[in-house]
Length: 467
Image 1 (cartoon, helix red, strand yellow):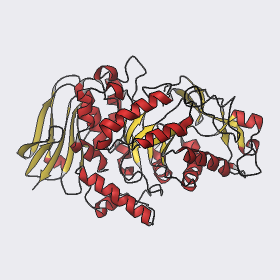
Image 2 (cartoon, helix red, strand yellow):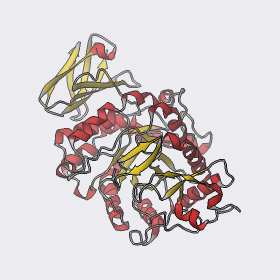
Image 3 (cartoon, one colour):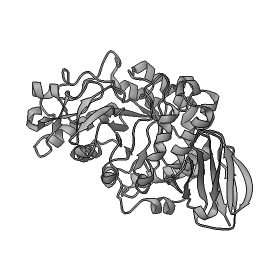
Image 4 (tube, helix red, strand yellow):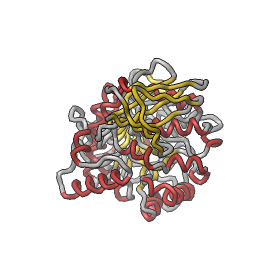
């Protein structure tokens, strides 16, 4: 969701446009889930042992304790391609994902904004958003059931707060004697990207009934079959909401991944990690132009992840926004730029979720999305750091559990250029074997360094093995 707004005093006051382990469950179920994930990742050439995965979790930054998102999630989202999602259009995309991408790890189908009626006018009997039946005539539960029938998982979307319509009609809070006016902070409006800045009030979590209201929402989602929740429009001022929702999802009786958006503050990264499974770290990569994105919106992402790298690990991930790489003309990117986008997301261990039209997936896009060696880099869950960002020729790398290095060479400039990585940049000397992940080819042994001439906006993704 786009962040086209003006911020004032830490609170969004004007919306300008609509598009804009460490902690694991100590139970048999938690252990079983971990083993399943390890087997799946190992099959892609990724993490090979429980000890490795556990060691990589950042003890200084405890993860959300729901036992989910042990590796970066993969899937497809209605935003950016489907501004106005419908039951039929979402199911059409899910069918393609299941047939062409599920085998490679893409498992989530995420409905973003646009599924509900204006919260300033219409809510359900307990003050929650009402489904837009003209778009989803059988409800979200029917779409979830279809998605599940394909062997995929289903995600939904919310923004924080309580609807103005709920407060105006003082709807009851399910299972309690409290009502909407008992918990609403009418002096604060929470952002909503479809209907503006005046449709959602804040929630006063010191009031009895506040947590129960959020719990009722989470229980509703669980009853629909939701496996993933994106909460949009959150920031430093919404920490209480995030904490409440983390607790609510856990008590719902269903495993629901919790994703935060957008452009969150790295100063509170430990909080985002403690209470959610992923968090957007920067601006939208969609250009809101004639194509899905453009190079200018992709290249600016390179300036975002470095300070966040330490927070990525099992249970919580730095979300770089959706990938726009399925169809070149629609995406607005060259093939080199599409490969660079996929490669950078992978080396940053970012969630891999697509934002374009899968029914128009072209052969090159499919080749990017089904490269097992590149997917394994992402699913290994180690976020890379740059050697330097002083020029447009950049080297990003991380050390793998087996002692090798994954290295990304990126030419972000507007002309052909040579990009060179010295082994001293990685912390060793002598010779090393170099393997090209995109082409699945061994390039040989190189002493002291490796260099390659790259086209404009092109890249290489390598495994470097010393000794």
